[in-house]
Every structure is written in structure tokens, then in C-alpha cells.
Image (tube, rainbow, N blue to C red; front, side, top):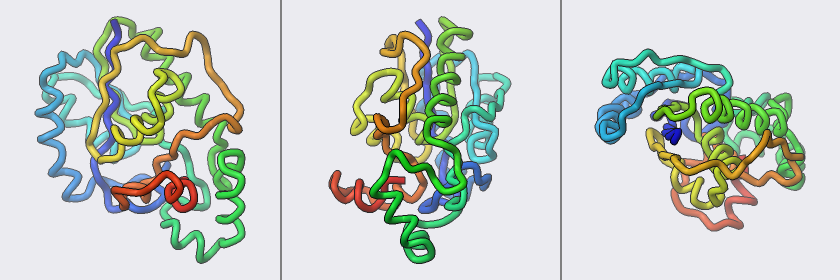
Length: 223
């Protein structure tokens, strides 16, 4: 059976902002997270490792690949969603500079895309196609996939049938990982209109606040 280990990259200085296709390096704390991550992954016989082509993911993947003596293959398809005009901003900054757009986005979520960003449906299709690649082309392997929380959340909920709450809790920390070894719920290529999509996007700003109610989340940090 194919085993996929989804790994969220370690911390960067853009924590607390919309960090999609922005390309920061790991900060000092992020680098300090790597030895413990590698130690936790030692018990699985990882045979292949892939990462997003963004630096924070590649830097997270490097010590894992070195431990297992593997070549890390970078793939653009593993990137986080592109937040467009909101890249690098905090939600408080967006509310201050674009109050009307921020209000409309909250009211129309998830139908409204990020301004000048990647369309929600395009992101969903990208995640599904990428995970299908590992399930179909790399069958029977144990694969480490270093990517971003939004990508992981979509994969867990839309392909493997995990609840949104559980996927959120499993991916909220930097340098966290989730092992999936159950058959996917998805039986064929999945593309859904964004009106039916409610996975919590993983803008780095979400991780500043560790505890919140569902109402607080939907009204303040759906990004």
C-alpha cells in the first residue's frame, strides 16, 4: 500500500502573513525545528521525497533527504495557493488598506477568489492532480511530501475524507507531518465548484492564534 507522509515546512519570518508563492527562507527557529523532525521520521522507511519548489519547503526537505540518502525532487505543483495582491500582508493590514475588498471576501467566501490570486478551483484541481500522481504513478512506495498547510488540508479532506477540524489540528504547527496509509475516498479525478469548498486556507497568519472558536475563525481569519 502507498504511504504518503505530508510534511509542513518549518517556520519563516513571514509567519503571520499571507505567504503563498512568496519565497522566504527558514528563520532561525525554523532551522532549529529540523533535527527533531528528522528524528520523528526515522521510524518510516521513506523511499522517495518530494518538495514544493519554494525555499522554505526545500530547506525543510534537505535534512530528511540526507538522512535517508535520497534525492529530493522539487515540484512547483506542491506550492501553497497564490494569495495575489495579499501576499506578504497581515489580515489587519488588509482590513486597513482594503476594507471593502476584505469585507466582500469574508461575505462571499469561498466563492470569491483572492484578489489577483490563484482561483480556488484551480488550486483544488492542482492539489488533486498532484496527489493522484503519487497514488497512481508511485504505487506501493513510502513517500515524504514536503509542502504547505493549505495543500495538505485540501488533500486530507477532499481526497482522504478527513474532517476539516482534524486536518486543521494536524497541520497547524510548522514542521508537523501527517502519515496517510488508507485508501483515498476519491475514486476518480475530483474537481468541485468552490461553492462546496470550505477547507480552511492556511495563510501563515492563522497560526498566530492557537485557540479560537469556529465563529471567530470564520469571521476573522478565513484566509
